[in-house]
Image (cartoon, helix red, strand yellow):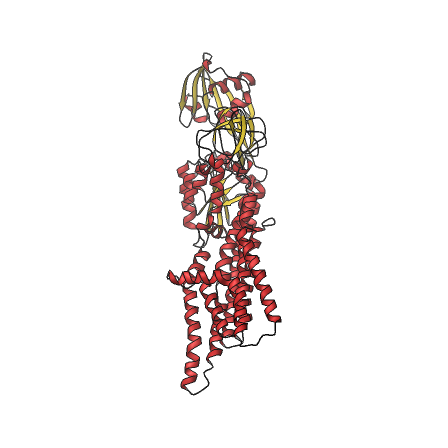
Length: 623
């Protein structure tokens, strides 16, 4: 509980104690002394509400809950209903305190669940390490990160090497090695070794800060229910104020005209009760709080949602379109088979790895890793990359051609197609076919369960888009039980396929595309909702996607949909409950059955129940 909340709690306790004492004192009902004494707890508990109401009137922003509470309680005090006047203000403040505490709890949940914000940065001063606030570190400063500490600010390693745990940011289950010259991002945990890093960004622009801001500011992107409640409150509050005024004036005036006792006091009391009942706190507070809690709960499950509007859209997802590499597969290419032709396996792998020495493509990296020995690049000459086909190079005097079947055909070599799943690297030496190397990207262990979970969550169609060959794509699709697969696609082709699916879906159905957030940025932007899979280390991922998964588990897609559905269910429960109770109590108040105590329940009681229901959105363990 923060200082402001503690002050309100103290005021509530003092006001409640004073009111209890006054109720025990034998005071005359209509005495001035009783009125003056009851003013003390009234101002103790309500002075800030009265102040806000006065400011609202002064700034011509009259109709809000502070104005309703001020008018209702001042009216009750003026009519001699001192107990009820103080009680309304007291219980309203209790409800406000409860709501403030609930929001604070949601914020703490988000901060605790995303434990990536670094607390300090180490800088060297006079030969000693000094801990400073990361906000105070300027770009270009050299900082020291010791084992077990978080990297506080994005930068470049200038000394040392270490293993980094990046799971909370990039979703990489395998630790990443950081060496001199490597870029590192804030929020990663140094697992071994001491690193000296030269910062390249301010703390506020670093990855960890951006991610935290992304979640904390998600409330700026409002959902349809939130926008509806905002519009509803702007119309509803003035309407009930004028209705209360009409209730206070019209019935007694009509009674006076027809010669009946007008009972002005009774009708004014009913109008004041009407005002308290009509206060829209339950809706105005609980609906945004539900979405805030939903975003916090999603963060707990490792799903970053950029705004409550995306929770609304996620709850209506019927089409899930996925990239293959890095989404359904590990995205880690490994040499799984070497098939030589008139050459040894070792020599075939060695020459192929040497030909790929200058390439940073993942497949080239996997060949060099499989070879596992240092490569003397001076032995590799005349490297020529043939777009979409492969590489030609002169290696130790041998003319090598390394690439796909298309490259072999360009050389006039007829080869039999390889039917095994994976990427096939064909090799020709001095114009003669010398065999092939098979490189495979393993399916993630959870991919099959992820597709099942999506179908159980109500998704109508699961689709995979990939640039891989038809043979490989079909095998993966069959293994996973996907509804459709499209292969050999360029990034622009993926956008076209998504547009075709968008054209056939119904108006109330939403389409999700799941990709790595960098290569798939165009299609992520084109889909109704873009989900980046384990790609938080990149600014492009954060910019392109609407939802970012903190790890690379495809089961989190169904989890995100489940969280969104639960959140929206709670939102509509609160809307129907709050409006239903208020309408019923308003009718009872207008005809004189409901008094001010009913009104307190209809306002504060309903708000507390709605807020309690909203907090349920934080619990996502079994979603």
